[in-house]
Image (cartoon, rainbow, N blue to C red; front, side, top):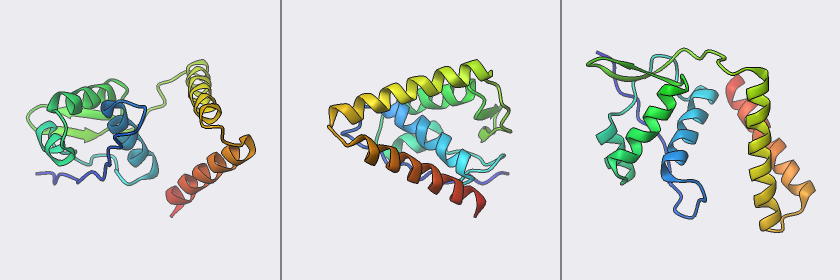
Length: 136
């Protein structure tokens, strides 16, 4: 029997993203950095909902999206597990998604009147930190 891996997820009430999106992003990041490994079992919908203090439907929606995207796989009667990652997106789709992410980010930077050079440096630092975490 697989042991359930606890998820370290913090929900930010002031975040412009929905709670479901915050959960999706947190799990994607943990898989990408290796905090969650292929085959790790995730908490049940009810268990994660209780941990985070959110509606189980919100967690269910997040898990469904991650499963549809290939991040997680459902095993009948056993639960949800981190799936073997396959590069399912075409180069054009990856480029489109990056463009959307950049547009959202730039919009936020402009809205808070943050200096562009400092925002670029912050992104570079965050990406470097993820790269270091992967190699550690």
